[in-house]
Picture 1 (cartoon, rainbow, N blue to C red):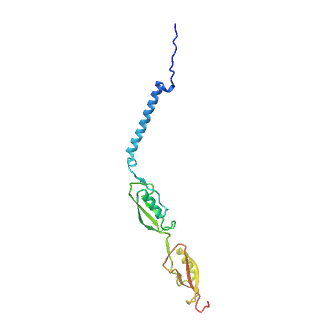
Picture 2 (picture 1 turned 45 degrees about the horizontal axis):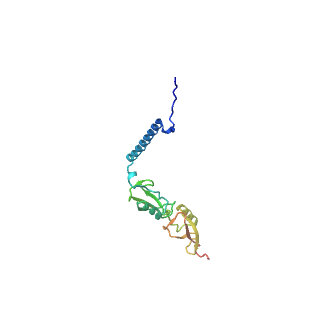
Picture 3 (picture 1 turned 120 degrees about the vertical axis):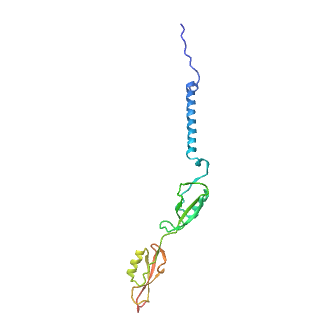
Length: 190
């Protein structure tokens, strides 16, 4: 009786029929996944693929000129919507934008900007006719401080405020120094 010899293929492992079937199946799975992903992207958000919409950049805390330039470069139209007092940012800085940063907009959309008008102004209080100590308290309570104190020979009572520089009612930044003119009293020598 003759024994049979087992003959094996002399080719590489990846050329065998089981490996070819495996690689073919993996290729089909990958193609199906890529096609399905592409269809789902188009189905869920078709505008993001076919339009030139852009996300609105953050221009808050930028000077007006730079903010306008950045918005215009992306194809949007900046529009000023006034100024508002702001103690944190200098005058001319963007403190509000609408729509907010990150919003996806179509080209040529309007973006409203609100600028800082600078710090809130405090009206100089009317302290004429009050003594110096009382005038200091009122100035501090109003948000301004007493700067230099000049004296004048005018007036009958000594230590009474005759004038303020700037005048009462004028707006000054919070914490600004106000000059007081105080009476030396009548008959006093300079």
